[in-house]
Amino acid sequence: MLRPLEDLGYDVRAKNHALAILTQDFPAELGELVSVLAEFRIAIPEIIGGGGGEARFTQRLRKSLAEAGWPKHVFHVQTIVDGVEREGISHEIDHVRRAPAGTLALEIEWNNKDPFYDRDLENFQRLHAQSALSVGVIVTRGATMQAAFRARIAARLAADGVACEADLARYGIAERTAAQRKAVARLVAQGLPFAEAFTRNFVSSKFGQATTHWDKLVARLDRGVGNPCPLLLLGLPDRVLVD
Image 1 (cartoon, rainbow, N blue to C red):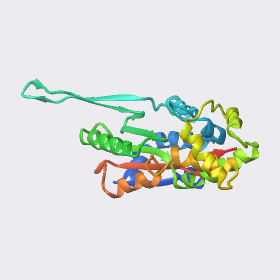
Image 2 (image 1 turned 120 degrees about the horizontal axis):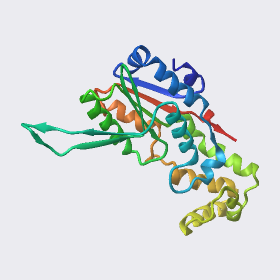
Image 3 (image 1 turned 60 degrees about the vertical axis):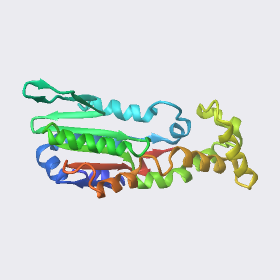
């Protein structure tokens, strides 16, 4: 059932029988998720112009999932010992899908610091231990997307004729720090075209190795973070990026 995503180049990794559970107990719900992700696209200018707050394309993905029946939800876990209520714990999950067979939880990690993966996986683990969760799903930047950023962004800037800081205004970039400007200026002084110099600085500072991307997520899976919760990990491919 994940073939449409695999054909698009999505990274797919499952653990603790997640695929068997999803295929047998949640075929309709898995179909909803696959349908939403198969249609999802990110325009390169949206990445270049993304500022503070949640990106517009992430908001679109959230809206599509919510409309498909995967809304945000806060789980409240309360413990009572000998009639005494202990302090409760809350787990806010980006998207939750309830079904007759159980509950699915999904987190989108587009561009956070990579320790957010630990939070997500540990939340899944605790909820699964309470029989509140059947499968945990994480959608993040895939390996091919991470590798493609420099070439795709630089090509778009060059095609748009971006040759100086002022030209960035067309993407909604109104202000940049002095340090960012100086870093790009140093690269231009070394002979790089402005589009390439900006892209190199932009990608390394915004989408660096310490952010949420496929390799960081898989490393945690290999270390057993989140066990024994069934997990499905999906990495957005470069083919999601459109010009």
